[in-house]
Image 1: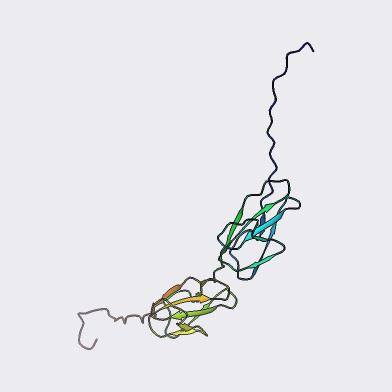
Image 2: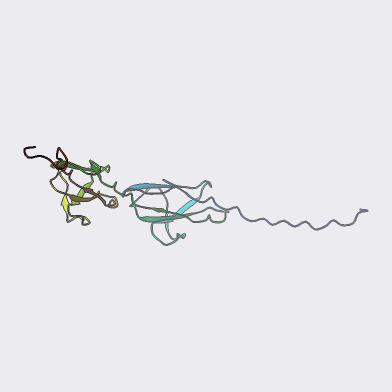
Length: 196
């Protein structure tokens, strides 16, 4: 009473959004058979996920515990909860871990005749394949089983494969044999007298 009416106050209220799911581990690379866990910070939320290129919906698989996956695949998930707006879609690509590139010892030339060249790989259980003619090795190439003896100039190329890993990169090394020193004369040149 005795006042003009107030201005009209306007406010907009929207439902809260469910927290976006979190993956553990958060990214790759991984080996095949790795367990992936998912969680959501919103209490009572359900997580739906796919292990493929398609986006998840409420018709997708419901997360109920760690999921075992192979490397080289995307995992996508979103969460829903009563009284909330659905979360955004979280997407992670888990690449397959790569086999370590083989290492040569000695690492380079020149080397003496009959030097033994060892090849090793840091990835447990890896099999090394190699060539001695500079060509790119494949799984049809010779399998490494022990030191290689160098008796001529040679280019060794090797790569490694391991279960549940991507193939390694190819490493190539040229080994030249140490050349015998050129003979020297004393005196180095003439003129000289007979009988020198």
